[in-house]
Length: 233
Image (tube, rainbow, N blue to C red; front, side, top):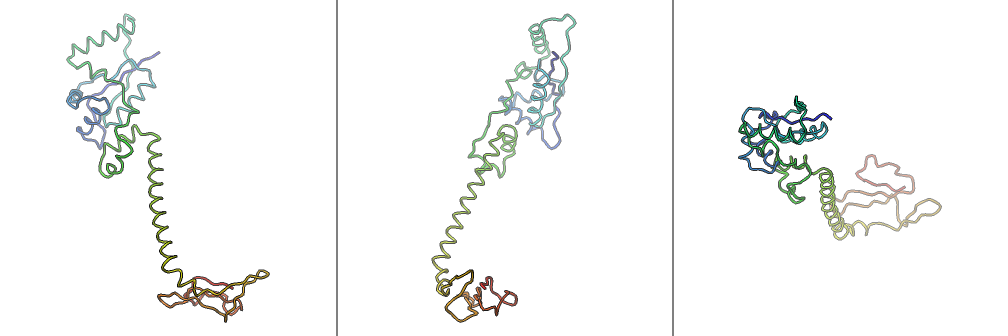
């Protein structure tokens, strides 16, 4: 099976600053930013080795979400067909001779599913934090969707409470003035009738304008040329 390695040469993606990338890499590999500084020497550095292709591509995607640009290349076959353990030992020795820190050449496993922030953080960090949004994109997965549902439910509850109090206020303070104007309406054989002269007008207590018209005689068949919003025929 072919093996691959990830190489980093200090390049960063467009739209990122070096400081942002260093900070993101330090967070990804759980090391101090000072150690990440050693990756930006301009020389190719092996980030991970002895990977199958799918793992290499997955690790490359996680790495490049930090803003760094890396490459996946095949491992070179040794002429003496040495064992994998011998190859690792040889590369470890060569790395130490090159002066590069071994801890950087073989960093801890990528943290691709460990969230840095809790569900409380979005309530304030979503207004300003780039790190928060990157953590959501990299690690939250389905939690991001669930959080949106939670936020929607929270907003709906507040809106529902507002509607409830608004309706209660209308029923308590304003509705009696309308209800007191309504005559008794009788329905018989599919037809409506009232014990009052028609057309009958129900007015807005504040403006005095007609808002509901009741006319079962056929004199008024449309709300055209009126300010009313309801017509009962």
